Length: 468
Ligand code: SF4
Image (cartoon, rainbow, N blue to C red; front, side, top):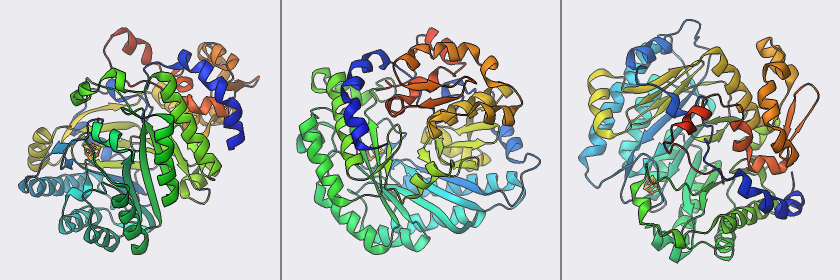
């Protein structure tokens, strides 16, 4: 995919966007989280962790959620605790130590990890010493393999040079910084004043300390953003030459993030302006040589994420697009999600529930889901569409022993309008290929294969953000 293809499609995209602007899942899991049930608790999770057949050779992916932030960004729908109290991180570390030990015990065989990611909240809300302690807690239980990807999300406003040194000392090799937008008017509206120089300083410290990959998170659709103002943000971003960029659509989900109600509708870019901001950014990244990974991620061609596209190991989970498809993911901390071969488990979201449960019982599972055979097939299909931009009917048959087209005849028929709009092409045997245009709206394509979405929509409850 190149910049020219997007330039040619620009008017076409704008013309069809209104038909595809609807609420829909981001497919960081299938089935999606609203399907999971509280009947799945710690005992089910413990049993799944100890399932027969898991061997020491199987690598692990680890996720650690550090929920603390110093102040609230008004766009944020993450699971976070705004605090300056020093005792909260101390209690958090004691509880997570119990949780990690309980998971290690339930797994029975010793296993090593090929990937570790810390998110939040703000992991560098912890002091450098606390960062080191937490890393030891996790890696004493699950040692990291040589060459593992070890990544962290940081906030440049609270991350010091001492943090950077401690992170490198632990072995972190990828660092991801929230940037969002550099325009002062936008920053004021979102309650996140972050001078570009502060971000540039952190980039410099990170590169000098030897981080292999420096990444930025941006958000489009924020109050007061325009195509012109966001173009200036892009200039700043490109100037710092990140290895990966995540360009997230602002999700207006007031039932999750009540503080978003403070945004005036009139100050938010309308759907057409928002689409143009997004397309302008995509075109710019492609012109600058970034590869479009999918939906909202871009990476330099030599980055591992780009290589994962090439060798079909790209994975989508609640961290977004990542590498190492098929590896068990263990999550620690409040709201963390674990993804095993045939189940999902999520810990209590709020700190006040997670902490006593983890401290007293180790596992703090709030809900989860065992995948049925139908779930497993559909997860595979949705994963192929979201990550590979294609679905090969013969690969489906080789994996599941069923012929794809007759088994999913209804869904293939439903894809008619999507095919007519040029989002997808279909072969005789039902194989699908998502076009460059379709990759922007890939959630809408995947939604056709979601067996739960119909009932979720009938319930009338707001569950998902807008697809554009
Ligand atoms: S955007 Fe990041 S720093 Fe801001 S409140 Fe959310 S988690 Fe905290």
